[in-house]
Image (cartoon, rainbow, N blue to C red; front, side, top):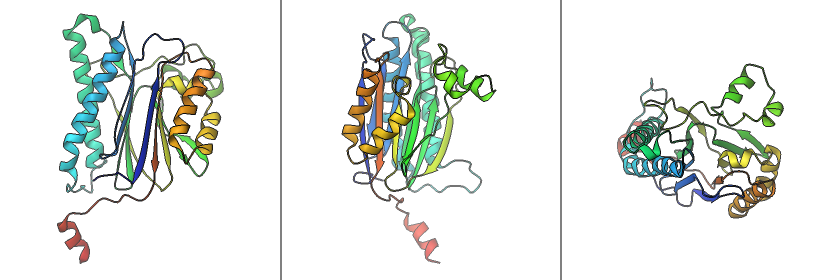
Length: 273
């Protein structure tokens, strides 16, 4: 289904003030309702390669294969929708491509990338992520973090060794425990949620949330809910005003109106009875 006019998407990326090049990569496809953000890591420019491979693989493969799912029925015993299953499959494929590229080209040895992606369809959103790039949802004035960071610090928080406030000031808060391309296999977290009119979703690299408090992010989105371009611009400016220690990337998605899936004629016939 074409989501043009149903959702609005704005994406921005900035090198920041301390890095010489940008290892973040973002990708969007309004028609398919797809947004994705990756934060690369590795040797000289290898992070750029890893993040670009992840985003390009994701955008090309999902947009190519998504139309085939339009009339596919969900099985009652399936844990996830066909769209979510496709998202997981393509993220795993991205992991394999990055890993094999690093093996074949020694200059890219050890490269990897985080990834967070969202696919909007049938008044729902599928979220898939690996690493510490995040997705937030702004609804009714409240900002909620949807993803859970794959970091050593998050594991220590869950075990009660640190509070979130203490963790924010730790020197080890960015040690990721999962990333694409590091190992032959990767565990991908996938979740689904309903989308309501006027929901705003934020995908960001840690260059934003490391430099800007969640409350400041919330206020910025609230004050610019009707102007996503301005909201994205201000979020990046705030990260840079607070030091700009890392590349910073944001994608904002706003639900403008309902976007239920078009049913096939067979499903319409069944529903009629």
